[in-house]
Amino acid sequence: MRIVVQEAPFDFGAEAAGFAAGRHDMGAVVTFTGIVRDRPGGGLQAMEIEHYPSMTQKALEQIAAEAVDRWSLGDALVIHRYGRLEPGEQIMMVATAAPHRKDAFEAAEYLMDYLKSRAPFWKKEYCAETGTWVAAKDEDEAALTRW
Amino acid sequence: MDVLYFAWVRERIGLPRETVQTEAATVAELVAELRAREDRYAAAFEDLSALRVAVDQELTDFDAPLAGVREVAFFPPMTGG
Image (tube, rainbow over all chains, first blue to last red; front, side, top):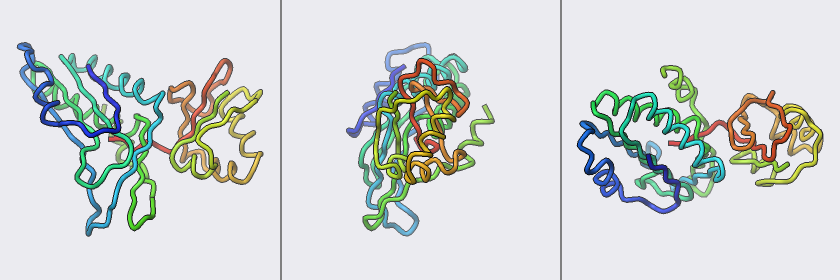
């Protein structure tokens, strides 16, 4: 299990290729990456991601540990960036490895649902030099109830 | 104890963190003390349903006790991922 919180970009291809490499007991790897999306019609200049440094690593480790327990995962990876990101940049990725694909898919979704609402990150969108905090969505909170 | 603010809570109060001397027994009592200080605190804590709290880096609720606590953080609902 590896948890990385960093400002710098990461190499999704290298991370995906290296994740669970050499494991002969894992039949499935699922990867997901979140990307800064422009607004419909354009105009997003950047997204600023703030986090709570002393809490972030611990919160992500807890979420990942719960996923590993719940689905008997062989491995899990979470990378999350903070700072100023432009449209098209990768914000974060998760990867899960399990003997069977259902566990890998479900655990990846679980990680994403919990990252959305329980990891201490906040996003601010900048359009025309005006910053607006992104509000949490009710459906993101509701998504947790399915687990 | 150290009190930390993030995102629009930080902007509304105008500080990322401060040290607060308090006898408050719970987070809710601490919030009441802060609200009574100045308008910017009252504005930040106007609607507690729009806020989340972490005590010593663990998410909790406003009834949480503060005995022995070193750090309390207030912030809006998270938007990670």
